[in-house]
Length: 124
Image (cartoon, rainbow, N blue to C red):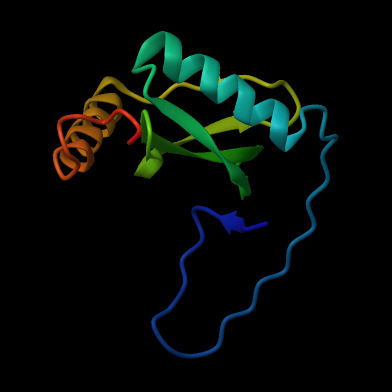
């Protein structure tokens, strides 16, 4: 699992000291977070996107599960990352991406799909 510390300034070179003492009650599992993201993307973005099983932990002002969102195609499965969505580990609230981020996810999905054949049905 990856842990991401956001909003910390890290120098290009030199000494880096990080002291971290974080406590929270994880009430939503990584798998539950992935399912919540899947529901969000299917309802709000595309039925051809889904959350990846590799979920990271993000520490900001609160702690979140970060779920990578992949574009999928029938017969191919996941073909590439289009974005990521965070879910609060305590409340289970999906941090909805902005309209701009959603449009960027759609653009990435279109670019990924354009490199695949038009007939995406499985070969027989």
